[in-house]
Image (tube, rainbow, N blue to C red; front, side, top):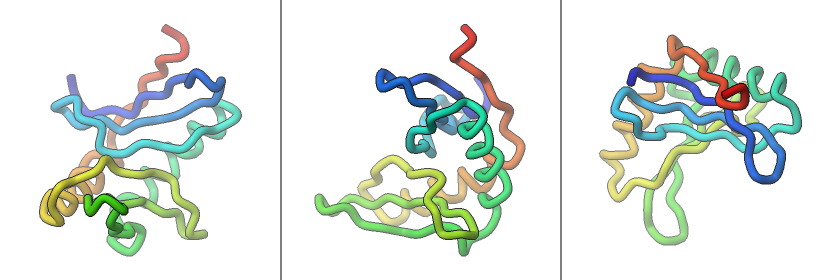
Length: 112
């Protein structure tokens, strides 16, 4: 399969998106949205903000693993990465989001 955003309904009845790379790995995931329209707006925000380095925040979890957030211009988090074991792997994750997100199509799994 190719890169894509997937929209799905969580067990808590909230909508989420995840950005998957061509290898089917999840490279960015959202928080819950109360409506599908808001979730789709979140995807659009990722596409707009993904190309710019200053929208990424590199963080370290309490267990020592690395991750990043993608933030909108109002500083709200619009996506969170998976956990990485090295800073280098985290940097590769950011590069993947920057490369894939702007042109990734959206697949709505709530209609399937």
